[in-house]
Image 1 (cartoon, rainbow, N blue to C red):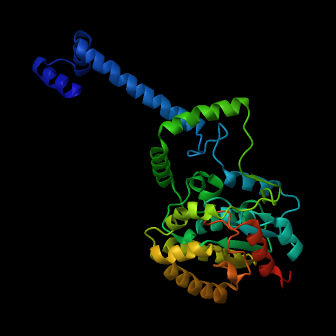
Image 2: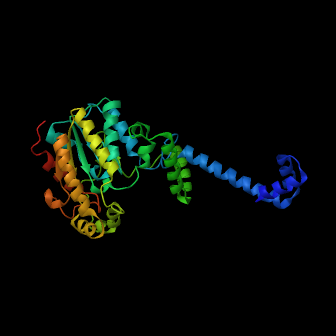
Image 3: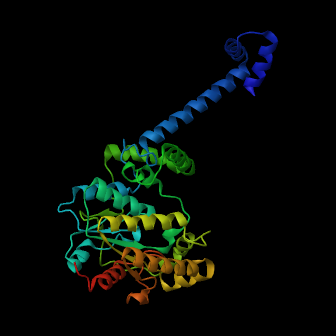
Length: 359
């Protein structure tokens, strides 16, 4: 409005636009106030954006100038892998649902030094990128990949921003600078709110004064550190039921791109003579019933099981359908929430997978 007003007046007086604009603003108190307010607001927003990029509390931009306050287990797991000695012969891949798969237990059953490389919100593209980085960049060619798959990981959600921001992983996913910039700005737009502003200053404070103990920690072999005497609360399953349902919102078929990435992962493993064991993770019985009533879960499960038969024939994988507790002698109520099996159920699946394992 200001520019249009000044431009129309400028046409009449035929003076230089910049000189005329400055003159009009300095002589008019109302325009002067609006101009000061506008440029102050613009300067403030620019400063906030610059601070957000530099401090980056949620690791959206990946500059790593400040340590983020968000759990960034991709970076942590890759660092632990680089430092691993001896190098692992078996590597666990998957989402947070296999955080509690114990590398020591796998090692005891298989005789293979094991590392748990699972990361939060992992999807098939992460499995492919992680495997590629481990073999190509770290020079680690394991004898075995163990992949815990949740059916919801083949949904239509976008790739996790932390994978896109991680240069070690995104280079294997064909993410160019344009896609990167669009993703970063969209992520920033979605997260920019009063809480984000607060967390900028929390990040600065924690970086200067020290971080509190993280909610989730991992040992040197990538396994989650937790209290094994803890008993799950069955009520947590009902409270988090919506999280399980959200995995399948607007998903009627397995995402084709994610099927392609999983196939590429299997082909990559086959090329490097790495055996692959895949197991389909369970839901609690009441969650399975709810998913069958409210989502396309039964159709998706049938589709995945058909796909698994193809994977077995073409890539020689071992596949275990542990989609419900009774399929592995599991405990129906022993879940940390609606989507995460407890460590006891994870242990039972591990024992079932490797009871006849031959190195």
